Figure 1 (tube, rainbow, N blue to C red):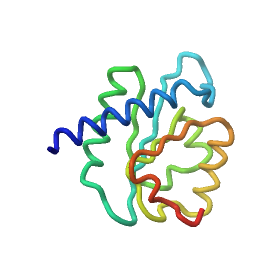
Figure 2 (cartoon, one colour):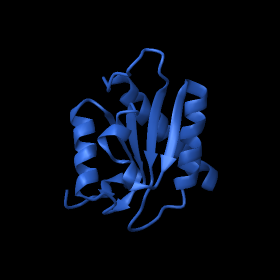
Figure 3 (tube, rainbow, N blue to C red):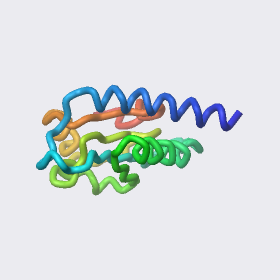
Length: 130
């Protein structure tokens, strides 16, 4: 049962990331720069047991498809300068209010500027009032 859920999560993440990678994103400073993805999994509500498996699945996808995965639960990563290093941001089963106004503004600017955003599973349970 647990293995089936992990496989389903990995499949859903792969499909979602594939769609994100096919859409235009923030251009790298140099063509040789590696493709980098920020995975954010902070929770302020229910915490899903599948988060570690999701991070592992994303890292495996990265290793197999030439992109780097940085996983964090530190909301201070959401600054314009830091987000500029990433082609996509993944909210992996985040819940509740996990970003302050300044961090929300940085994420909005990043997406408005063409940065990719992927919400996985409980990401829809995040930042209700924003």
